[in-house]
Length: 181
Image (cartoon, rainbow, N blue to C red; front, top):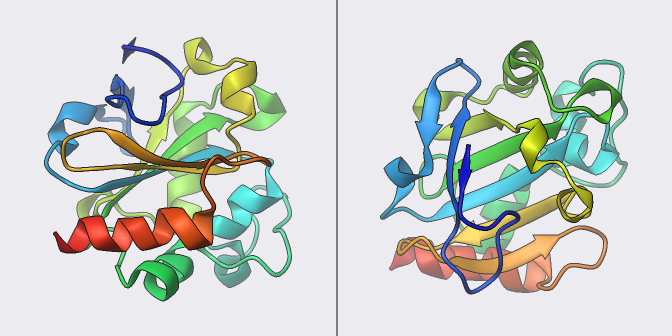
């Protein structure tokens, strides 16, 4: 369920979402308030998504392929922001598209999280997107990242092939600053 505008808009409060996580538990975004959150939008068939998730380390998910010369977002977070995802910043992936570019099944979300070693207990959360979230604007956010501050405002938008903010020069350094304050 989505309460508020979807997709999120830079400079605006992040919409309240209630989505199931990789364990099948219903997660409310409100439980993350007061924390810095890195949100990644994912399609299981996206080579960049596979790479950012750690595909170079663990291999591709479900017969997909991994974009070459692209490291995991965990690596880039340490390199460009000086932070550890899951420890300094809550890391949330929203799996929007599963097989056949449809909303993912609960099984796909669980398998994706397991394949890339994302652990809910370590603040590495994979949420199951819904069919209601799928539209052209959502599709164009993949691969992409949103940075949400402690006040729950979307501060940086590095989504899609023409991002508003550069991932390496803007979003990641800002994430480091927000995490340290």
